[in-house]
Image (tube, rainbow over all chains, first blue to last red; front, side):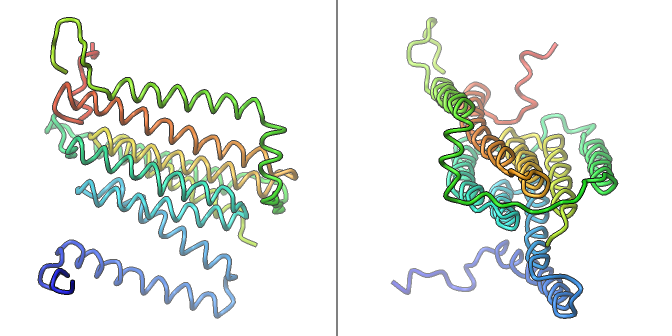
Length: 210
Length: 102
């Protein structure tokens, strides 16, 4: 069994390089955040929030910037698990569980299957006049506008309230039964549509092979 | 307690990053991944407002749950369309899907 394990010389160079970069970036951040925690600048929940936020933002940047598409998809997994941690910090365990199940278990697997079946490379057909600088400009403007608006607004006095885990099922099926039915129909239609679209057309009229 | 603005700023950043991805990527599946980032940002906002500002704190959670459900349905449907596109054009690049362009 042990002779099947890869030798250190056979490790993927990308994995080693990525791990080294992550270690170099993560250790100063960890030191700074722990120093802030122990000098009572921030509380323990805030420290967890900052760590999760760094994972979320770094994973999102990786998902939109990495040229290798499988690396981008794996980076997306990091973001989605970080978002689940953010949900936990917002005192909603149920949504965090749903996030891990649906995204970590379903959506990412579907995306990886899609990547494998289409060998989707990210090279533009139109080589000249790339829209990346324009896209960056628009996204930066919009992001700074949102951040400024969020920081500027008067939110009243926030006070955290918690929905008990046990109430969730009873309340969602009593108070929100009609939206639940609508979402169920939507899921049904979407999956039927996906099946009809992705199926190989066997009986096309002109006999054109799809 | 964590200030609410932290969550809102994080979700704004996540939305902007996803928006850049939608505009800059050319592969249909990578665009889908960026759309997932934007939807996650919206769900964070729903839950932050529900937890901090709503005394009942339930409607926002239900809408975040629906956002996650709709995102899952959207990924399934969109991958069906992308597979169809790949079968017709032998590529998943959105620049190739221009037969309805005027």
